[in-house]
Image (cartoon, rainbow, N blue to C red; front, side):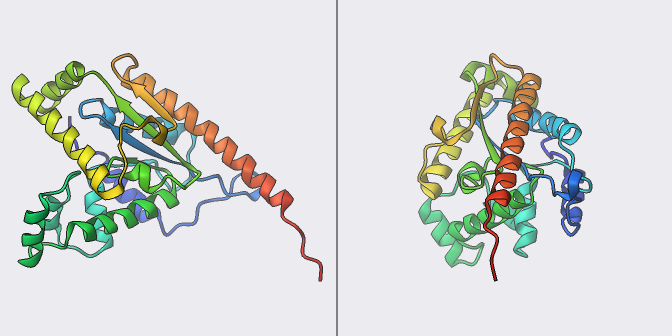
Length: 252
């Protein structure tokens, strides 16, 4: 499977940012939506994300703003936003090098500190979430956007056995190498969230929805998430409507 999710869609989304979203029925701007996907390695997040983007594009389109998945291409966006050299991409996995190694590389001028890179990644994630019509995979996006009411948070999980099978199939690894890959990636992501955001990413209270992809197919998971996201949009739209009606009129 090609992990360079929707690169063309990514560029299309970026190019559309300068365009104001069109007004909907009654001259009102459609309520913004965004989704974050946290995942255990091998739980099918990339498949779910791509399918979810297609479904939401059909069911909740905004003209000129294609639903776009940001996963590995998020790193490219961070580098672009902050005018950083492309070679820094290798220093931005969902984990960090040891504190000593990071300090030495920073002192030698090999790259900015991990904390600087995290801060820049956080700024870009918030910017994308504020724009809406994005599906943000990993990199603490769930925690970073936790206070944005228009963002829906999902966690994908599965048994180790099934997740290893997926990794073997998609990355063409031996069983032993797939087990090591899953263990390394999961530990790295847990450490990333714990050290930089002080949360346990397995905490179900961080999410609106947790889906076991052993029991629910990736296609069905995407459908379930899309239904939930559209309900969130209805709630956001109702809240905005009530807020406008309850806004006091100034008397001069």
